[in-house]
Length: 169
Image 1 (tube, rainbow, N blue to C red):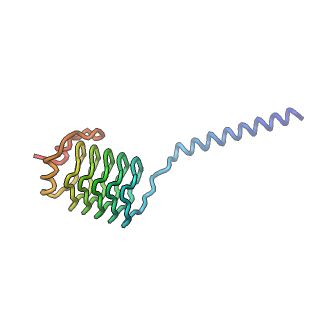
Image 2: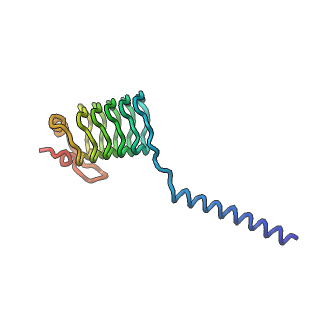
Image 3: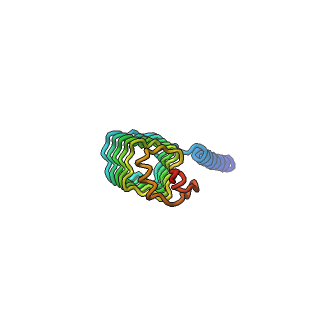
């Protein structure tokens, strides 16, 4: 009788261990992916979005003044006509983001990647762009001239020189 009981206990313990290993394996094999969120038309001043994966989220017409997006994944995010004044984008990935008609006055874009971003009509007055990568970004000529006056540094992720990515003379 005690042999059958000890066998059942062993089988129960092995079953629990097996299920635990399976749960861990599934969790590692299928990590949680980013869920696009709609923040359109919201007032989110001084909000902290740092170190988040916000891929494909939308902040159209949002007021994000003084917010923190440092070291965030913002690939494909829409900031159409948003107030991004004094926002911290240090080290953020803004590749293919829609920044059309956004106000990025005094925004910190240090070491940000903006490859392929849409920036027609974007205001960059007073923006910090040290080490930013603007590869394949169309920028109006008047804005480009202002950015080239302050452009410096090399992006640590892409290895590209900011002045080269802007095609500064």
